Length: 162
Ligand code: FE
Ligand code: FE
Ligand code: FE
View: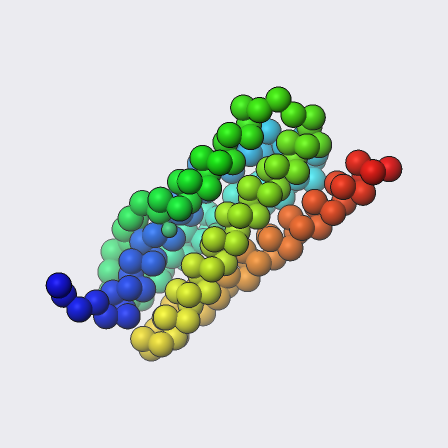
C-alpha cells in the first residue's frame, strides 16, 4: 500500500468539500422553499450565495496546490441532506418545520466547520499559507452562518412561546 502524504490527505479533503458544497447548492433552494418565515428564507438565500463563493474559493485552493478542481462524493453530506429531506415530507406546523430545517442546516454547518478547520490546519502544515487563508475565510462564513441559525432558532422559540 502506498504511503499517503499529508498533502495527499488534504487533496482528498478538498475533493470531499468540493462535492459537499455542490450538494449544498442543490439542497438549499428546496430548504428555502420549505421555510415559512422571511428571515429564515433570507438566511438560506444568503448562504446559497456564500456557498457559490466558497466553491470558487475551493477552485482557487486546488489551483494554488497545482491540481485541477475535482469532486469526490461526500457520502456524509449526502446523508445529512437525505435526513433534511425526510422532514419535508412530514406533516408539521410551519414553525415546527422551520425548527427542523434549522437543525438540519446546523448539522451541515458543523460538518463543514470540522472539515474546513482540518483542511486549514493541514494547508498550514504543508506550507500552503495562501490556501490556508482562503480556507479560513470560508470557515469564518460557516461559523457565522451557524451562529445566525442559532439566533433564528432562539427567536422562533420565543415567538412560539408568546
Ligand atoms: Fe459551505
Ligand atoms: Fe465528506
Ligand atoms: Fe455552509
